[in-house]
Image 1 (cartoon, one colour):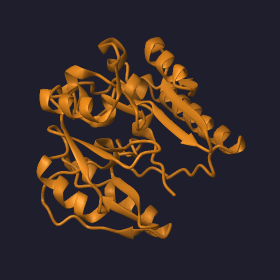
Image 2: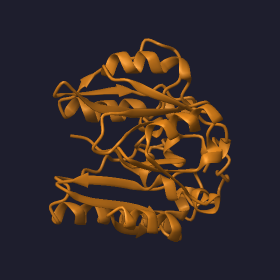
Image 3: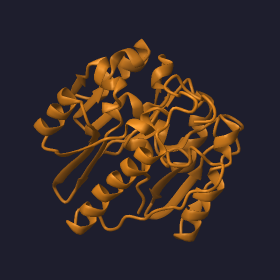
Image 4: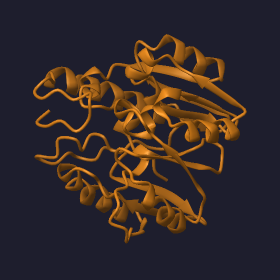
Length: 264
């Protein structure tokens, strides 16, 4: 790392050889899911020089299906170095036939890092407080023509919603309660019949930054190694779980969910 944007980051701490190995291993899990027929394809977006956080591809945009039309909202990132990543992801979606929806607000919005859909559901939840600002959510909701449920984040270690909240389906979600305000917790308790708390030790090991997917009745989860309790919850919920090592990326504040972007 060359700078510090969150409490997990340590300048110069990354083992680049191990980092590339870990990235390739995660890529191979997605490629195997394509071979297995669970996913349709796996595309790799080439990195750009001096865009060191570009690997965290969940943050620069939010893609969506709006009345059957493929659309995306480019993010308005809080940090200047991350603002420079957005045009590369915008071009990717434009090249794939997506319509661009532009935010007029000057408030920050950090894509799928803070705006999360419930698998098999029709709800969007947004974290705010550290990166995304609450004021932008009305406009995002209007652009996507869907209600967005705001959740205030209160622990800077969990600066994006995807680090502390993992919805499994419309009935069940995993979370770290202390990452949320009391009002946010009340909202989650009213929304999900089953809320499951994970230990903070596992949340700090990015267990809630797992990537869960449901397709054709099959459930798959990809999760950072060393999270036995969270993994057990996933397996009990019917997910086939793949364990990967992302330690070098966790030093920059992200794991599996941060390192991918799903699209149609």
